[in-house]
Image 1 (tube, rainbow over the protein chains, first blue to last red):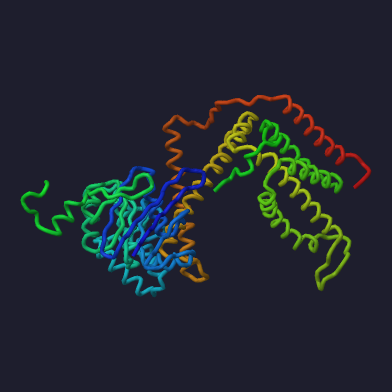
Image 2: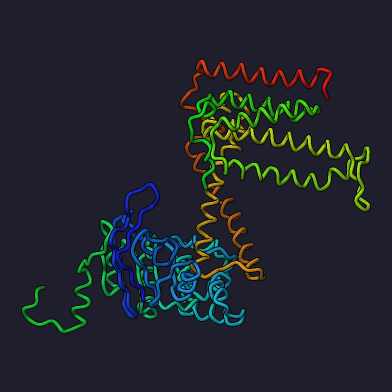
Length: 234
Length: 253
């Protein structure tokens, strides 16, 4: 679904952030990405979403190579993106309106959008927030609502930037539950390695501009592919 | 948003003591605005253009700033020539064009352009921090200095917030069209910006109070007048004196 090949990126007047980066995300894979502050994690996600254009390399989304803003606009209909800071995402007076905003942009009628709002909020277990003022929500509530605004568009792949930053353990657990129940394809960037290990099939490390395998989730994939046998390394 | 794009440069105006530039601009603007003689206004406009050209700024950016000023001026031209009483020189239907109206519009156009050009050349070539500094040294009331400084400081913060929200809308496939959904969304966006900037200003004020702020900005560096600054001060005084004399003396209109 998403394929990045030999991506290079540099901000003006600054050193290169990404250099020769490859990433492949097929349907049904859940990818986690870790990396130090400033290693280019957010930049990478913004390149996938077409908010930034790479200085070199090719981006393939759903079998096409988008070149113009219009192409990316088309691709964005199928990708749900949740920002690191929920305040960047929520701008409508009430939760219901903010969640309905995406479906309305996709051309759904007011009625359909309203149904979508109820369904999404139900799914996340936050239906009690529907009439609340977004500005007055707590940090954790804002994060879940921001996730709802992306899910309401029924994306084929969900892309999350630091979803657990500033969340309590309880809300993190809630988020993990939602992801494992409803999301099959995702790319998640986070500092929280234990969260990533549980929320993704493979965890990649972004360092010096490229992604490398960490082997962090080996335990997970290995136990799923075959039962452990005596003689396996612990 | 880059608000100090003219402040980078090495012309004489960039190197001049900002206190002199503020004093010079202030007196120039007052005299230019109050003058009612075409000769003085033409002189002011020419002086300002020469000063602006000698600052070596990017012509296209300067032109776009001047275009903003002249957008307002254009509106005056739509009304003033027809609504000022005086000697009629042409008639378009029921509209009467008067000589006095045209002279008045022309004079406002020249004054506005002269002051705008001088402002860009003199104030634009200093960083806002230097200007604030200079304002404090010139004993301009603290409240005004603070208003100016915070306006500058937070316009860019609010602009950043705006850009981020717009990006957030973009990834959710928002494309502005002329329909209710678009107008409502943009109105929500503006509303959210107001609410947030109000809240943010309160937080910043609290943080300042917690660090002992009681209305005074303390300055760390001090300006030093160089020889070229004294020369500049004398030249500016002469130009302004010339304008005052031109205004008060008889002879040419």
